[in-house]
Image 1 (cartoon, rainbow, N blue to C red):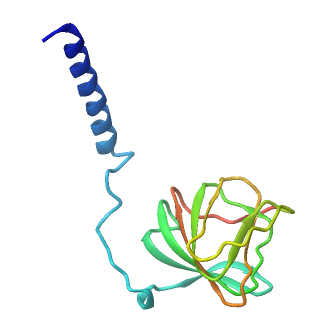
Image 2: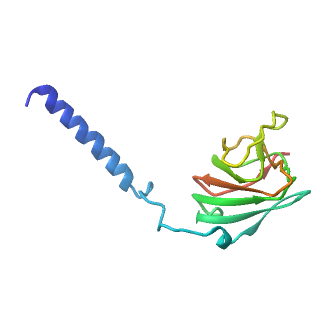
Image 3: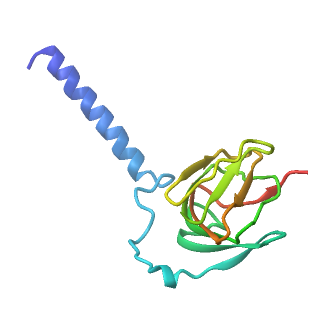
Length: 153
């Protein structure tokens, strides 16, 4: 083997080995847990305590535990619900499943998000989330840490 081949092979082993070590690191588990399949009518929703004039947000766990760490959770938001200006410690990703929602900075442009639409919310950034439709909204959020809701004074 020539010198370039040996260097390339060593580099490939180093990169491959470091990514394998990352995947197996206990702080970064390679898997979230067991595989699951949950029919929509079997998602168990519970009250979150986050309320507005139009009602209260309900959460339905898909994986993980939103109260303690990494999770994927269905959020049921009543029609016409408008949150207070608030933040979350962690970033999160949201997808609209039902209804028309919006997520924007306070006083920012409201962009209607129909089913299949996506948004990303940066952690610790003030924002408002709402259900614009006459029907209730259903969102799916994924968050790398526990869910919190911190009203902005």
